[in-house]
Length: 323
Image (cartoon, rainbow, N blue to C red; front, side):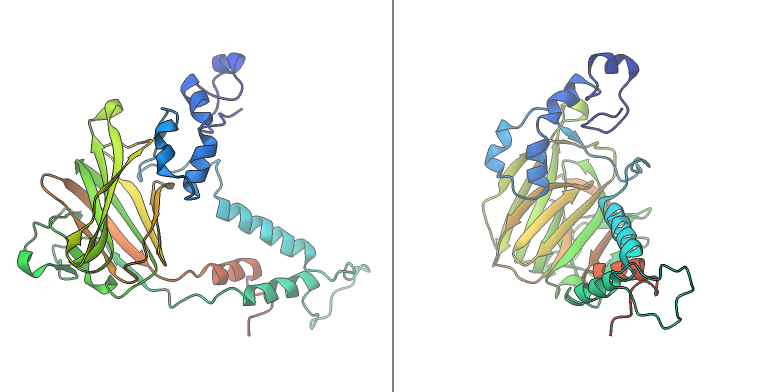
């Protein structure tokens, strides 16, 4: 039997007392599941943060692989869809019940035709632009600094980027909706990034900050906007998550219209809406003694989910080709 909170096996001694949770801490944390689910959907108001249970969520570092017995939601859904197509791709009447070979020109079954028709109504994927930087060299010409701070304190050592003053990834500046992903480690205080940065006077900035070390550390998110060179009031949000200050984590920021979602280690930690900046790229920065290491960064535009689903379901055979 597995713990309802962490999904790890419950020890034998513990199971004699509690067959649902592996520890008292996880039993207490289990009561926050409904709040956590709302937060992951981006529907939890941070004014309720103080009412959450004191149990933190431990975010898995990027270097650790997920448990092999936990299948991703996408994989499960794809397998279910594939099973449905395989089962129902015959004619509604049940197909050829005589067992004789089907004619070579047999039309696709009813379910296959309906699925193919439905896929036609999904928006076509875009050109699938993807920018990636692995920081394997000291060349930073693709990252534009403000004219007044050309050096900006940036450095690359052993494949790790350490940002200084704000630099914007020049190839991303004309983009609008995208997924910004990177793998980073907080070395001192925080890791900071910018999105929708059209220039150094207009962008949205976020900091993920650690105070203290080890089990006594606290995590908070700070964000602000720079509009026309004027900074808005900084919003500080305490987060019920635990990060290891020596580990790298996978960060993802999704910019869609006026909605922005921040994900760390697969957990949604923040969402906000702001309609002022509709286009602009991504960047990194540090302030004062803040220091972080970035292993790689990537920006993706376009969602080829429909084409991937079609390829997975059809393998060129189950569903007819899209005209």
